Image (tube, rainbow, N blue to C red; front, side, top):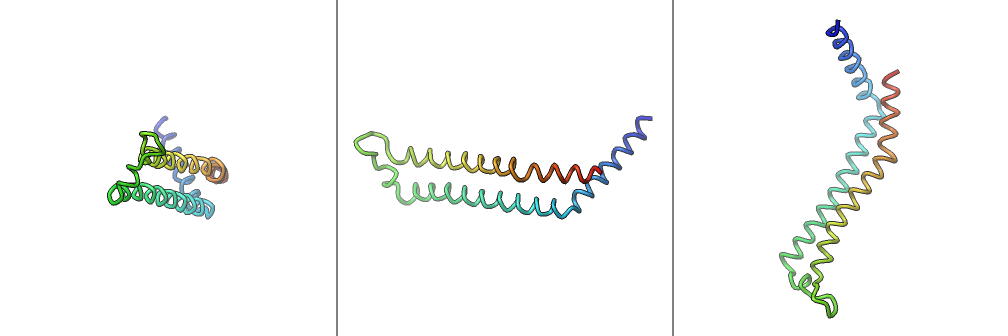
Length: 113
């Protein structure tokens, strides 16, 4: 008896997945989510590789002390790279919660009907 129910559940799942995949809102959601992900990844790569290039070619800039302190500019700039990564992640989570998740939930509900 359980096997028949499993086969029916698999058929229902396949039908729901194909209904979701064929929904134009879902395709738009995938495109916008992918575009945002690539943009944020590009920003993070630019920041990271910019920092690495400064280390490689202009060490003197990062070795410069801040005022009369013993701390150099390399410490806050390196910390800034980390904070940019955290900020970009937070921005993606904000956008996902505000835009992507409600749309995906609406698509799921429509596919279940």
